[in-house]
Image (cartoon, rainbow over all chains, first blue to last red; front, side, top):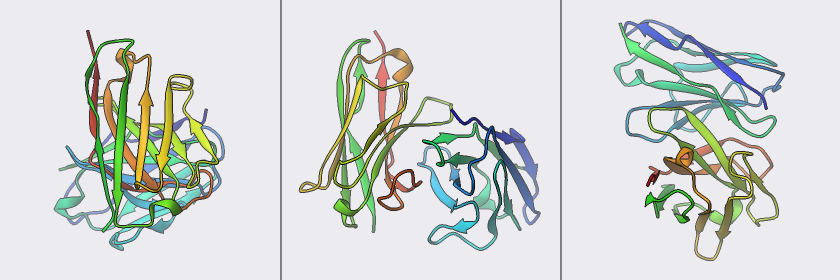
Length: 106
Length: 121
């Protein structure tokens, strides 16, 4: 099983600043990596797939990068609605999710 | 608008069974693979099962293999998850999620709001 490790567990950032979230795979997943946002009491929302392709309707302030085992989700200028939990998911070999990064207001 | 509405969750005793349903609308259901993903209370996401558009390909997580059965009825735009021999560790919100396409191993893009399954005596 491919293990996905996200860091940090919690990230405190002020509105308007940049946030950088990391995700590492225990073995190469090529570019088969997605990012999801989840707010309390809501279903996950797909942000990025193919490591860097924004899903339909996702604002340009969200960007993804990386390949192989190291991936990054960057939110360029945080809005109030961006504070949530973010999960990475590999789909190269079945599906596994990271444990999540909680993005909180500083 | 894509809509996925799960139903069938509830409280069940260990060893019991439950059947979840997911009603899909707003897209051509028969053209997409579908998934079940679960989330235990306060925990992260865990993929459970996937089924291709024509049911030709079906996959399960090791944690549910042999106990859960995924199926679909394209005429009714519906996805199902039959859960048998339930355990306390199956307690979770179960989400129905549409895959981006119909090839193997593609990520889900639209998710339902989930249905809670509680396994407890």
